[in-house]
Structure formats: structure tokens, C-alpha cells
Length: 411
Ligand SMILES: Nc1ncnc2c1ncn2[C@@H]1O[C@H](COP(=O)(O)OP(=O)(O)OP(=O)(O)O)[C@@H](O)[C@H]1O
Ligand SMILES: [Mg+2]
Image 1 (spheres, rainbow, N blue to C red):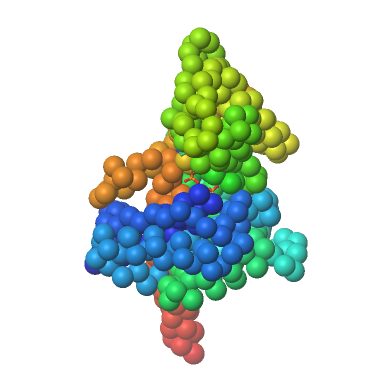
Image 2 (cartoon, rainbow, N blue to C red; image 1 turned 180 degrees about the horizontal axis):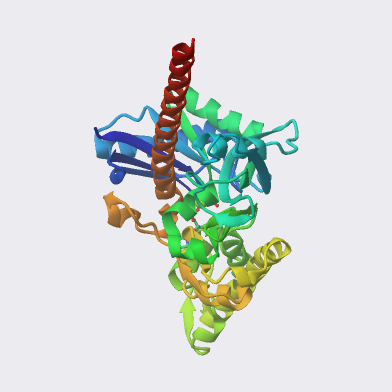
């Protein structure tokens, strides 16, 4: 049966709504809605009334395009206050045959959740990275292996309760159920990062308007997540101040003429800034504009690099840097990333979906598409683990029945 799912990206620049139908894990986009974001700053919701208006407009557009009324959705969350940390949990294998079951995995992961949780925070994600069975590490799927001790390495994301409550409040006011809240960087990486890159170790950077979300993969699993309240809006503000023009015009110039690498610009080339009422048109050197953009990008990437180096040896990240989010559309941005991170870099666009694909095949839609993919994966994993849990229960029931039968026979 086809199932309808909706993702809503609460971006600081644009609200993006995608309606998709899912059949046998295939995702087909059938509705898109976008609106100018109001009431969100640096990923955080600051004005419920304004945001609700923006949301309703994007929702209406997607509903009209698909002919479907949205009743539930998955939503992203992003803030510099969200924390990610690694933890370990252990379970002892007590079955007679010492074969590891879903139940043992669940217990190990459950034990890994036992971290210090400040009272104003709650768990958002508990993501398994790898397992160790007795002395054997780097195990991806321990079910069916034999051992005495199972250790789960997980990445845990915790969020301030108030952020989650605000999201529920807004959506309950507009009569839409929130089925899942997903960390922005995790969603974006689901859409834009290839499995091979995750396995080689890589850095996903979602360079948005008001916030930059980072997710680092090591050996296929999520090792580090963090967000910085810095985004492409800083580049626009720099242009605004340098040429004394309104923010909207600076935004236009950044998109039309912006290049992130001075070395790639003809030093003699000049461009006209758009005309403004009451002032003369200005002619500027493209090289000067590039200098402004490159300097700010270098600064932002250097901060990210510093945060990563504290936690991870960059030799473990041969999969390189994947830049996504609207800010990654700036020409020449990968060159700056390569210079600062010392790693190969590429632009990550969403892949692995069908339907109205060309419209959303832009880095701006990585979070929205990633939420759909993450949610579908989650549903099928939950189904599988319930199935294998059911099978285990039936196995145990059968064993018990056999035992009872033999007792009865003995009696
Ligand atoms: N062609 C382009 N060149 C340079 N920058 C661009 C281009 N197109 C979009 N951008 C920038 O992308 C940013 C918007 O990106 P995106 O839609 O990913 O942000 P958002 O998800 O709404 O915000 P956030 O993730 O920060 O909450 C804006 O700052 C915009 O200037
Ligand atoms: Mg975003």
C-alpha cells in the first residue's frame, strides 16, 4: 500500500515542504511548497505567530500541488545548543548458545543511553555506530554472531526540551501531527552523502542562511555532530557593509556575481551594482567582492576545522568534505573548503528519490529530502527489529514449550 509522508524544513531562510508517496521504500515526491521564513533565527524559533504564517503558506502550496491534505509530518531541528556525544553500552550474552539476538543489541544500546542528561535537555537520537563482540571490534551487524559480551558504540544527540515543545505546540495549533523530529545535519547527510563516503569517513557541512550544521562520519557511522550560528547570511552582511547597500541587494549581488576564490577571478573585471533610487550606480571590481567572500568563508571553515580536529584525526576522513545547503551554491566554494580542511571537497545534492525530482535536486533541499529518506529507513528498521524480536519470542516460546513437554513426559 502507498503511504504518504511529508517533511517540513524549518529553515531560517525558507520553509520547505515536501509531500511524498512511499511504496516499497521508493520515495516519490508529489508536492512542493516553499515560503519566506519568518520567526526563525539561527535555526531557533523566536516568533510562533510569524512562523505559523510562513508555515501555512508553504503547506498550502504543497497541498495544492499534490491534492493531498497534510495530517502528519517529520520536522528538522537545528541550534547551536543541541549537543552530540559518543557513548558505550554493554550487554552480556546469556543465551545457552551465546548467539547474539536483537534483544541483546537493544539492551546494549539501551545501556549506552545512560549518560548525564541536564534536566532541561531530552534525548533526540541514539544512533548505533559499531559494535564489539568480545575482542572483535568494528562489527556493523552483530546479530547471529557468537560471544559472551556485546558492546555498542552509539552517538547520542540531546536537545533542549523547550525547542521540542515549541515545535509540537506550533504543529498542534495547525492540526498537524509531528511523527519525528530529526537533527538537521543527520537529515542532510541522509540525502547528500554516499555510503562509500560515510565508510571512508567524511564531513557533511550544511551551509545554510543562519546556521551551519556539521556531521562527521567515521567508519560508516556518525561520530560527531555540531552546529554553529554562522551561515551564508554573514557573507551577505559583509557585502552590505562593504558597499553600503541594502541586505536584499547584497543578497542579489552575492548570487549573481559572487565567487569564493579570488584566484579564479579576472583582476581587471568590473561589475555594476544594481541601481538604487537616490544614489549613483556603483562600479566595483569582481576581485574585491571575491576577496570579501573568500575571507569570511575561510574564517567559518577554519572554525569548523578547529571543532573537528579536537575530536577526530583527519586522516580518518578520506571521504572528504560534502558541502550542501543553499550557501554551498556559491561558485568556487569547494576550492576554499579544500584549502582549509586539506581534504577533497564536493557539492552534495539530494539523490535517491523519484517524482518531481528536478525541482528538489538542489543543495537547498538536502534537509527536506533527507528527512523523507531517514524516516522511511527508520520505519523499515523498526519493522525489521520488531519482526526479528517476534521471531526470537516465538523461538523462546517454542523452547519453553519443548522444556515443559519434556518435564511433563518425565512426570
Ligand atoms: N546561487 C547562490 N549563491 C550563493 N548563495 C546562495 C545561492 N543560492 C542560495 N544561496 C544562499 O543560501 C542560503 C539559504 O540556504 P538554505 O535554503 O539552505 O537555508 P535555510 O535552510 O533556510 O537556513 P538555515 O539552514 O540556516 O536555517 C541563503 O543565505 C542564500 O543567500
Ligand atoms: Mg537549512
